[in-house]
Image (cartoon, rainbow, N blue to C red; front, side, top):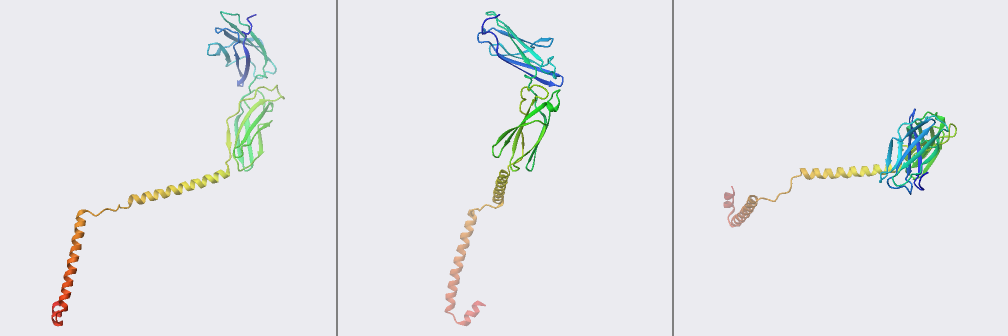
Length: 286
């Protein structure tokens, strides 16, 4: 029952193990293209004999429900191939809303958690990486991983599929690298679900050529700074050249006149002495 095109569309649900004993459930959808603006949607999930309505809805700009989140559910974290029934109905004063119902495989919609305690190091030409399995009731052998590696010197990128939680890779020791890890279930223990989000980026190594250039530039900057500092110190403590003051100029002119007069007097005395007898000259000098 219900009017055409009033049922929700594009329904997507994801579960996640939030703690070893608890599973959260999150669903999103789009309002039916024919649903009136006053339509209100309501979501219920059923797992085995348990049925529960969504406690928290997210809404669009028209205040219509477009998403739901259960922080806690009765879904078993270690359940294998069990079904989760999602039922969404609605109400409107202008039309009958057609209900929606779908069965999801528990394992197919589980989004795995991010690996924990990731460690990446570079030892000469070997890249070493280790981590712990995500929060989950399943054992380590039930997971597989993808390791995303970028050579920051060359720009080369690669994604490695790894079945264990540690590995060693031969790399160029003169380059630096960034890496991230994500996890999923493998087929050994259960059906593969949704890949986890990527971990935070971890960077290791340094580009040796770039380091050399950096050291040269740093040395040049330090040398230039020291030179400028030395010039500033010399300029600060050297007394500035001063123009002679007015009294100094007057004293200088007086001294010059005195020297001129003295020279004239000596010249007259010398001229007079040339005309006197030697005896008179001797008496005059001594």
